[in-house]
Amino acid sequence: EIVMTQSPATLSVSPGERVTLSCRASQSLTSDLAWYQQKPGQAPRLLISGASTRATGIPARFSGAGSGTEFTLTIISLQSEDFAVYYCQHYNDWPPGYTFGQGTKLEI
Amino acid sequence: EVQLVDSGGGLVQPGKSLRLSCAASGFTFGDYAMHWVRQAPGKGLEWVAGINWDRGSVGYAAAVKGRFTISRDNAQQSLHLEMNSLRPEDTALYYCAKDSGRHIAAGPIDSWGQGTLVVVSS
Image (cartoon, rainbow over all chains, first blue to last red; front, side, top):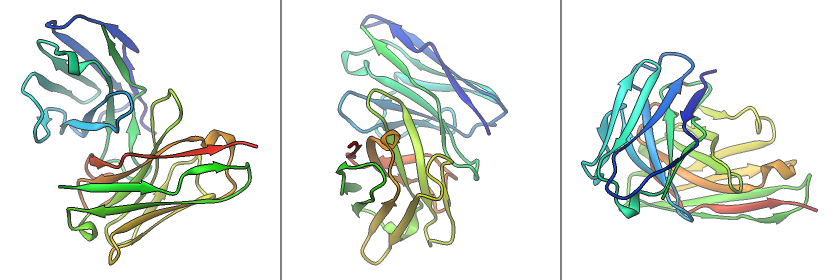
């Protein structure tokens, strides 16, 4: 079973900064990797699929990169609404099903 | 607009059963695989179960296999999760989630319900 490891667990940043979140897979995924954003009290929201394709309505300040076992989510010019928890997810691996990373919390 | 409305959560004693439901609208329900994903209080996301568009294939996380049953009614545009032999560690917010494709986990989840809270406690 593939294990997804996100780092760091928590990242303290300031509005306007650029930040890069990391997601590492225990085996090669090609590009079957998604990123989700979850704000407190809300359901997750799809940001990125195929490692680098922004979902509908996602601002251009969000970008994804990587392949194989190393993936990143970069947010440039952080806005106040970007402070949330970010999860990576491996898909197209059935069975066993979806595998999520443990999440990275962006805090001020 | 895709809408997924979760319901059926509540407080239940260990060993008892509960049935969750999800009412879908705003898309052709029968064209997509569907899932249940849970989130324990203060924890991350955990995939629970998934079902193909035509009910031809279902799958479960190891933690719930043999206790939970996922089902769907394409005519009624609804998704269900029958949870038996509930344990305290099943306490979580359960989300109904729409796959982006027809087959389980072939693509990412592109829509989520608001979640329904299940608390297993005596």
